[in-house]
Length: 320
Length: 99
Image (cartoon, rainbow over all chains, first blue to last red):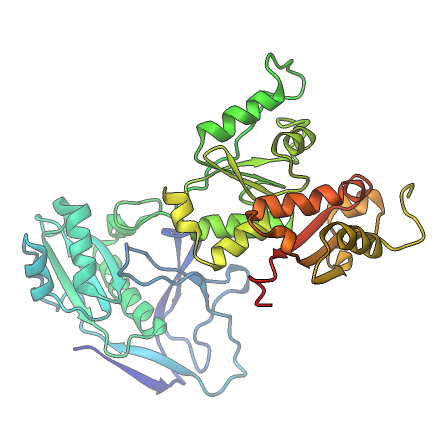
């Protein structure tokens, strides 16, 4: 078992990585090495490079740090509490062979929090991760990338707060990089093999090829076809990624939180949806936006969707 | 504003719904100030744009929410064409309201 100690820190030597994460699971590395920094200069992050740690999400089991920012600290703080991992080194940890059956994996690996390192059959380190349930994460990896999951080293963290977990992950990463000079392939920027990428937002649908293109069918027919050919369509003000109106924003939020696969149309887009607002008001006999259609039928606007959401009526609406 | 009479829009909305729906409860609240930065509001210079409307009426009996909202919208079509931008509608029957 690895112990994390809370100590009051006055002198400390540590290599620090800074992972600047433009998006989840991709990072650029820059080293900030402080071989023997004196007195309370830990951690001496440069100000223009405010570090933010983010971690890796696996389905269900792993830990997510949406944006954990460590603020630069200056020397005026005298009390400094730092989590230090009395962590067994990566090289000193024995690998456990990954069994084929998921239930055997669960039996062999701890279902506790900690850091883990996955090796392929050549004994090459593929990925270092942290998890709230190491066994479940190993099962998940074995499922998705069995060819890389031959054995796993595990370091359970007894008091698994974010800092402790991050520190333990960093120490194994540092050790591996120091000895091999390489980042494990699964931890490299843009590698999506091990971590679930955030789902890409769909693009908003456009009704017309552009305002200067003469339509051969009435706009009303285009609307009719659109709402009948797509199960759920939301006509909103602004794009789905940046709604321009609070009511549209709420509708997008509800649809996203229900996990609905929906199409969106920006009624403010004068280039590709010119004339849509007036035509849609007549088509649906509904004077305001947003408007939500399910299987060609108007469900209503923000008020109705919100009220159905609060009553738990949406799941059946979208499922049927 | 051409259609703006002596009464405030809130009062016009209220009396229109009052006479048509004979509600047991009617509340009309002008919340335009909450949307002062809203693009559509800025463009028109209109300051009576957003309202919360709560109507409890037996005339809603047997109608689904879409139909009820349409009833309210239809009654207020003049207002909607003269700068009323958005309504937040609560439309219930007396029974649903626990009366």
